[in-house]
Image (cartoon, one colour):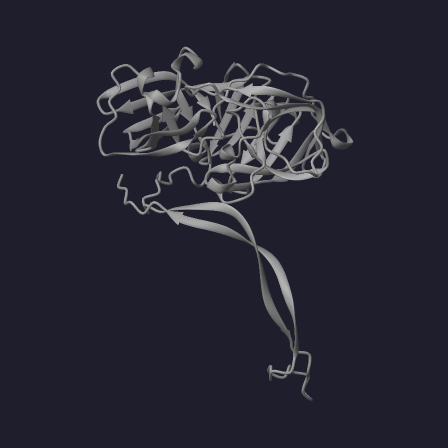
Length: 369
C-alpha cells in the first residue's frame, strides 16, 4: 500500500529506564513483518513498513479511545479521488511491553473496510507502523531469529559491524531509497533509484514506463498484485536475469509490474523506478540508520535460497471468526491402579466455547512461471 500524506511531525520515542536499546520478537507472515503494539492501552498487531510515512489504523473497536480526531482525505499513487478517513493526534503508542513508547503519537484511521489486510494475510492486522518509527532510531532486523533491536544511535550497537556492507540511503519525503543495477534480457540498467519497502512482500517491483525501452519478457503471468486507496492493483510478474544491490547479486528474481493505468506517474518521485521488498531483504541481517542515511546488509543463511511465486492457483482468504462449541467428557472415575476408567456413558460433560477462523478457498486457475 503506497501513500502520500502531508508531513506531520512530533513523534519522539522514549526508551524505558533510559536504556540505549530494546529487543522484541516479530512474526514473519507472507514476507511481511508483524509486531505487537499498544495504542492507548489496547493491544494490537501492526505491519512494520518503511514504504508508508505515517501510522495507519484500520478502523477501531469501541474499547479503543482515540484523541483529537478530525476528518482527512487519503490519496495514494493510484488514479482516483482517494477515500475519507480520520486523523488522531497525541496518542500513547508503546512497543515491547512499554520498553519503548511515544506519548504524542499521530495516526490516521482508515474507515473503509475494503482496505483492511486481515483477510489477505490470514491474521488479525490492525494497522501499519510507518517510516516515523525509524526516524530517530537505528533498527536492526534479524530475520532468522525473528527479532528486532532498536538503538538510539549506531554507536549503541555493542557489536562491531564486521561483515556488513554499507549502502548509502537517500532520504526523500521521509522514505528511504537506494540504487540498484538490473539486467533484463539484453538491457542493463545501472544505479536506478528504488524505494526500500518493508511492506512490499515481493522481491522487487518496477514501474514499466520508468525504464527506457523496458520489455516485460515471457513467460509472465497477469494477476492481482495488491490493494491501494484507489482500488485493486493488477499487473504482471516474471523473472529477470539479475538484480544487484551494492556487491550482492541475485539471479532470476521475481519482479512485479503494476499496470500503468493503476498509478499516477506524476505522484512518484521524478527518478524513482520501483521498490525492493521484504522477500529480498529476508536474505540479510539488516540495519536501517535514517539518522546517518545508511543501510547495512549482511547475508544470512537464506541468501542463496531461490525466489518462489505461488503456483498452486488457490488463494485462501480469511473472512473473520465464528463461534464454535465442543462437548468434553469428564472421566473422573479411577480403578485400583489409579488409571482412568474408559467412558461408559455415565460420565458428566461440559461444553467448551471458542472461536475458529473462517477461511475461503477460491480461484483455482493454474499459473506457471
